[in-house]
Length: 206
Image (cartoon, rainbow, N blue to C red; front, top):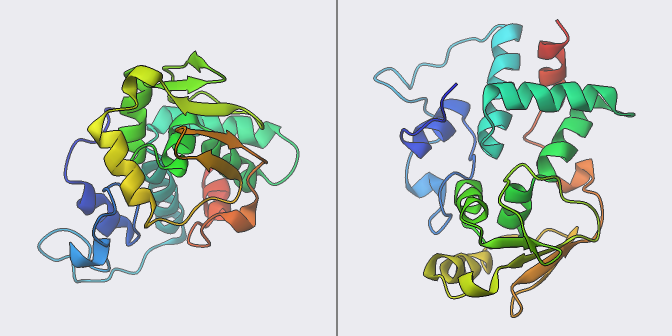
């Protein structure tokens, strides 16, 4: 399945949730009516079946993290083999992706931009360049901006925007040095209650 290249706000409207696909300079509510689905008859609220609810929740989470279908399914299979709650394990695996950590630290305005920074070899893990967005970050790993990339305007702009965003308590970031550390494993209470991961587990368990 190809990566979606269409209007970003359309995806957020489809899922009736801010997927943080835009920079966050302006609130998504000021750009569109997020409660109205896209299309000519978007104002019509359809009653969804249980399967449709499960599918929408999977699509919402997949689009939130910018994951393709096959890769997302692979994360689910890996999560199901780990000890503990499968749905929460899935969230924790997605949170440990390098592109997500770079976004959470504020080096990229969106996860998509963070993936670009990684692909363009602007991100280091423990002082070594890593160009794989799906790289799994471990506790105490140091994430930093490659020295030659630190003057990029988009990185500086992202750091300015980060002042308006909520900081992640499981990360310690030194913005002057443009580096940060994953302090601990993310916990379910750290993440949005808007995510209903149990619906995704029900979908894949069929």
